[in-house]
Image 1: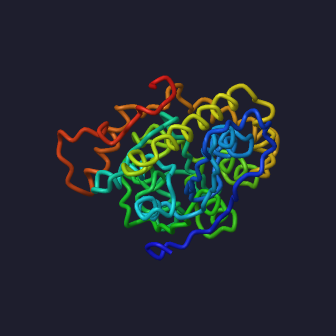
Image 2 (image 1 turned 135 degrees about the horizontal axis):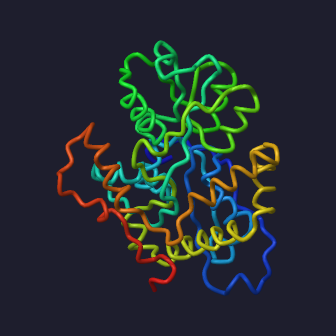
Image 3 (image 1 turned 120 degrees about the horizontal axis):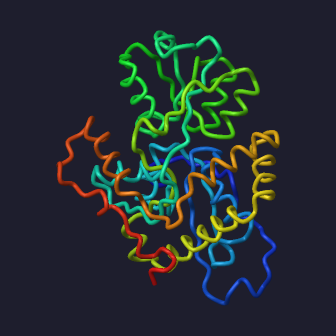
Length: 316
């Protein structure tokens, strides 16, 4: 396997019952998308596959579970066609990999610091351990911003990495850690188990969230496949906005949460979605400022050169 990357297939190509008329006579394209774990922010991709939107656009999709830090290299090696973390894609592109953001459908992030009930003030975390999905991931940078805000040295708080939000939730609920950074519905689910939402972190830093990142070569050599994949995601976003009850039921079934938790998760998701699929330049510039704390990046570096929105619907 290229680069020795081990990937675990956790969702196979969806077998959807789609009317033959919806499957045009156009050629079918095969794609693979990498995901670190089950997460509500990936609902547009779950819907795109399970409701047949990818099939409708002539795309056979395979969803691959892999840790976030290896996804950029996996795209370059051809193990996957897309990664879904826009922040991870930008970080890798700034470091020199020829990666491009082709859609970014969230302008803000819903990350929440969730702790056990013994944590009553930020300083109570000193000497404790926190679970994060990975180093240099969005939860990592948000937690760094939290520590900076409350003047806590990062050396005073232990960190373990889990690989994804669902595993961070498991680390908390098995009492391996005193807290973790979660998104819905895991935050509400943790509360139902006796933990507490300590602080919303989304306003502490500008960090891009979810979309699709691919290689420059993919756009050049498989442009039509990229266009169709983006179109399917846009159909999925429209479906989510128009189908509250069914979307909520999907959340209940997929995340094994109660109806009120699923309704809160759905409301959060719809609030986060933007309308045009474009990365907010302010967020992109703010994220570069975060990256500058750990690597040299020219002051006049334009993060918008790392995006290509020419294949978004309406641009043809």
